[in-house]
Length: 197
Image 1 (cartoon, one colour):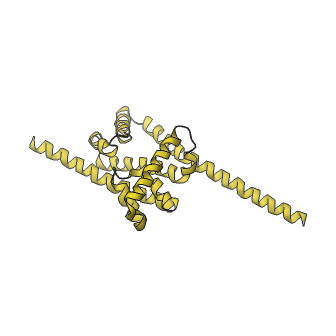
Image 2: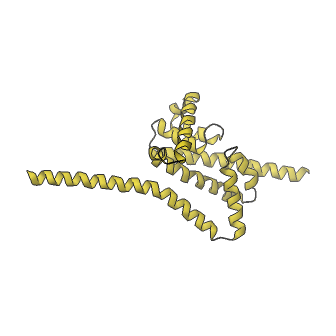
Image 3: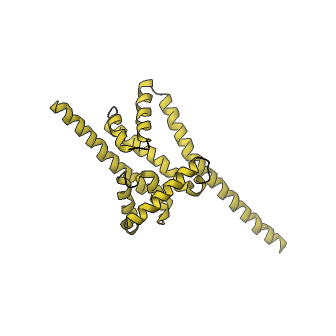
């Protein structure tokens, strides 16, 4: 009897240890991928690093974000620009869908996440159809940068009860569609300006 209880307790302890290891991995993996990306660009030519750094700084701008990044990003080939933006948002969304509750407790970052959560709650109230349409609704929200974007989209997905995987896929899909439209529109405008000037 005691041996059975001891075995049962040991199994539960092992499960808790596994859960802690998974939680640590979910916290570390997005930062590890981001660090590897920065290292990769540092090892490229200074010209390449400078171009991608400029696009990232413009894209991460709190005012305009994706819209500001388009004119800056015209220095990159369109496919590279789209992939870079989607990859950046995918890492950010991965961190948020995996660590939403933990992220609120991290100094400095916590306030940013709480503010994004408030914006997500406002978006859910304002765009009630997004919850009704689930995955497609979230994709549409993320497609419009002034409505949600990837940060708020990641949080909205969690708030409306979507699984982390489906939330992440919806954010990536919305980001890909938004980026493709914005970037090719920017290229078209630049082409037309050159053509008529």
